[in-house]
Length: 153
Image (cartoon, rainbow, N blue to C red; front, top):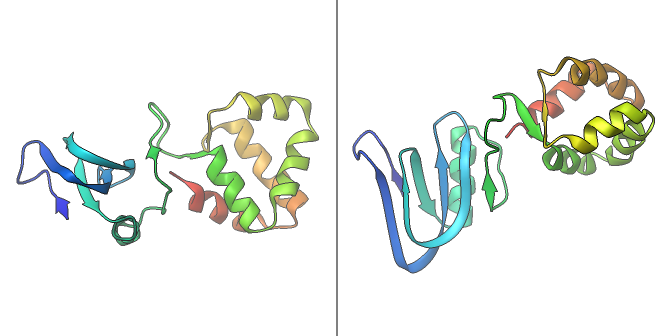
């Protein structure tokens, strides 16, 4: 059940007797997705339902389907991906080893990757690495760019 903020100043969903999944978003990105019972209060859009219903709502809204629990990174640039979402996508495509080898091949790249909490797609050093990774993975730059867009959170 969707609870729009346009009709309620503070969206509130109460479910003390049942446990359900809550999807909180601002119509442009997922802010949080988790399972809970009790009261959830948020000024953002709130959708509550089963895991399947919440994932269907993510799809309907054009968001990537994320696993619970998920909380957006504070102060993350609008065009960023989590390292975990990238790893999972590359694993799905059979490219995880290519990424690990690519990162390990350059000491500075490895230090930067290890220190990063998320990957900013607007970072000039990272952006310069994408064509190199595409070559190492046997993919085109367009294929890597499409893959990165699928990983945005």
